[in-house]
Length: 123
Image (cartoon, rainbow, N blue to C red; front, side, top):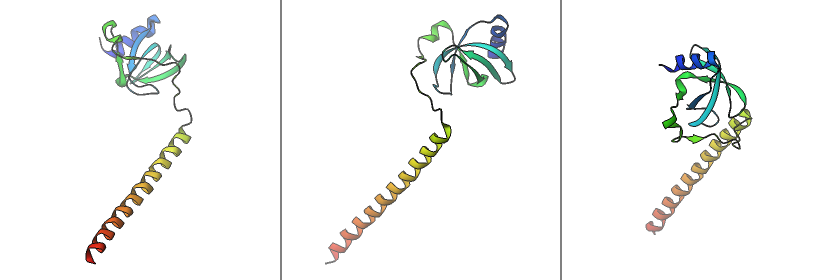
């Protein structure tokens, strides 16, 4: 049975489905969900780990069997996901600029060292 059919069946019966979502706040961690609506390539479900309603792309979900459950990391309730995406992006851009400055200074120092070495050999 394909993933979409399993999710639709769980939606109709109100069953809990154990999945691993490949992206999100805790990628590749086991989640327990109750599907609410399955539409096109998404499932809207209640995530029992975070106690919130979330949308998941079906293509990024892996349905688990009991044998697979133990091989994946478990959901961490104390994990703090990025909640302020603008701040995260601003900090990421700042880090990129700092890397550019650092490597530019490093390059200048390397050129200076080469210059000093050659100049000292000339005399």
